[in-house]
Length: 285
Image (cartoon, rainbow, N blue to C red):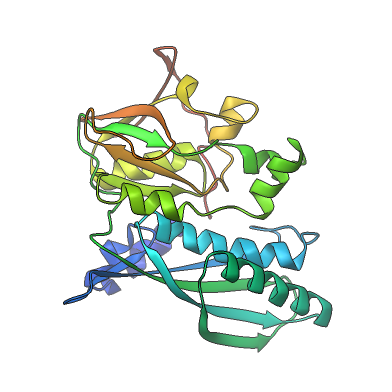
């Protein structure tokens, strides 16, 4: 069973704030205090991080990928809940030190969670909770909108492959969630999400959620290394968003495409069509 098939089975269980399980986070509208934003991610050894990655870096990544989901909703972190498998004393202590570093950096408290004793590949989970005013979704892109992205795409992919030097290694091991940018963009965007599984596959997901066609100009994307490898690599944790035509962009970002009527993703370079690769990004199952 694929990830999409499993989520489809769960969709009838989705509550009002779950956005039909088609978004990165749930959003509960509070009577007097805006939106409560909740997200939960699991990272697994051998899938999302390497066995040789330092425990301190794994702790950072676990928190950062969840805070990136909050960033895509323009949310301010309120706290996290941790699910942790105790295994090796040295690794556990390193993970705790990494948790201190990342939660301190983003001023985000640990609210609780659960620990278990476990053997085998590590599976770590975190729930992040944030607050926002009118959190944007990935489903609001409209024909005529412009497509934008923050940062450089593919840098973390280079780091995973052992390429690109210190900057690429840091992008892979210690991603920086775009919380400040997300809060600045949230009141202005028509749709927004973070780039986690690859720029192409996430742009395709935005198009599907919005019921539109997205045209992405490969030659406009700021990339590290080979362009096609970069846009399919994943682990970028940048913000992908749409703005109304001519609307000012309040953060450092690059316009990489446009939205039109239709469906799916269309890729071009120098104005000429480019066939979509067989693999658009990382897909579970």
